[in-house]
Image 1: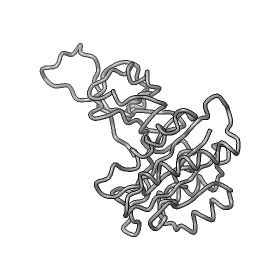
Image 2 (image 1 turned 60 degrees about the vertical axis):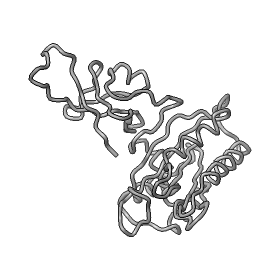
Image 3 (image 1 turned 30 degrees about the vertical axis):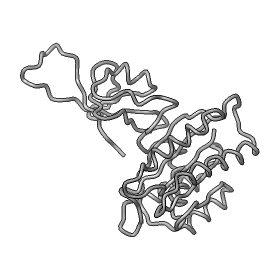
Length: 247
């Protein structure tokens, strides 16, 4: 498996890093299967340039027809992702890219990702960690500041206990509004009542716009809370829950 991290790829009014991550997955689909795309929240601080909320994205891929990518495949993959990001480059953005075999993500990279959620770090910090761990990290324009978040995304994605899942596998964005828990589970998502820590197997969930579960304990989990019944609702009606948006 391969982890890709991208960050600071957009400007105000552009499509954003999540959409770029999906475009990368689409471009690589013939050779690489998407396992998940996850948005990770980094520190929000006036000293850190960002478009809106300082998020980055990790992409977990598996080589089709092979359990492990060789060095040649990895070099080609880096080239392909770089080319997609160059096509999407917008003046004013500062994109960064990190690519690393999943099993090569070091503890230092995971710790760096955690630091980026609580501390202001520098490009020099990121480059030093990447150099020690011998992973591919580069800036692709502007100030190259996105390389910080790109490395952080790889660390947080490997940690498997952080972020909001933007895409699972090759799913479509067709689950919106009110959905059954069984329909949600069919996408590989577990449903948890955040107030009782109960795993749910039946009922209805109001998703609002889109299904956006979280990555927790290397599992995809949608957290929900029980909705209050209206006075005119039947007591025999199926339990209804509201999806909770967590970072």
